[in-house]
Image 1 (cartoon, rainbow, N blue to C red):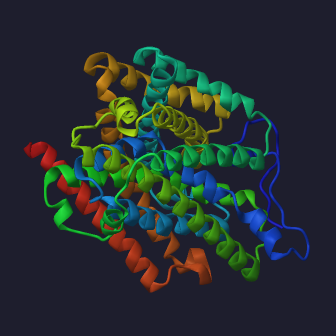
Image 2: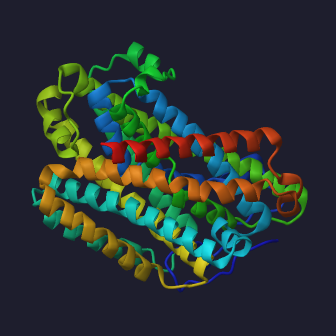
Length: 439
């Protein structure tokens, strides 16, 4: 059996978990599902963080249900890429960061590491801003104080000291359920046009014909397909003990694929719910200028006729920010160990990442004011999208290599689809950069 090293010295980093999850002999279908379900759920958290809330609220407020198809297509792209990551980790026993270090020149590897770290900082910036805003809305503190309070989330990481990966996954499940309950309860309080919702899922080039919706669409893409999640998924699938023979690897790939697809469909439903809520509550009442989450929070009261929707909005936003803390910490450790062969305790990694995010967050809210959070969140997601091709390229190349993957290498149609996503995302990012310089 293939197993990861076991130790209880670190909180929950994949390379230092307190035990791998193992299949019992003659396992039933249900037992197999219970073993393999989990990594996809952990990954899905990265697809419903405060950055998603900001881009979806702004998209729904300004353009109604028109950009729902962007949420759907971004989620489908995420499913393709995350399945490739999982297959790479299962078949080779190494994550994407390790492969990148081993297969590219040192200078190229260091550059890829820098881009990966930037994506984590951008994601953590979104978590800081989202949680700070949640503190402001729910506790009444100022936004700078809320930013400082987010530093305390390191206590959550320390609270997982010595825990196994299953305990982390259970915490994540609870947070996902909290987000889902809050959002779908809010949907019940607004009158959504479900016929228009269905039409919004139909792809339309006309909806992206101008700069503003395309900018938001790229933000939605950046908020959905997280670059550091590609590194993370290829690592955490190795917390499951897998025999190295072909039938066992094939079985692991299939069950992991189910875990990934179901988890990301749940994330897509949550992201779509945020956009639908904003479209129903704001766009169709004439408030197409809602680009800040705090404005959305206060406007929900008069629109829904009570304070319950706003409270649920704040609780869901807080849960989204806190849940992303776990994935950001683990992903940072995976990237640091893989690219640099450097191991530090997860709580120290949390302090470094959070410290780097606190500085721009504090500067942003002090210089731009309380209503800058929405714009900063959308900007952070666009930055994430700009980093994405630098993680996609090695992933597609590695999983297409028969000398590395053997019979599990990408088939021609899988490779074609993956390269289509790569060039499409790269072209959209190039357009965005040109628009920024021209503007």
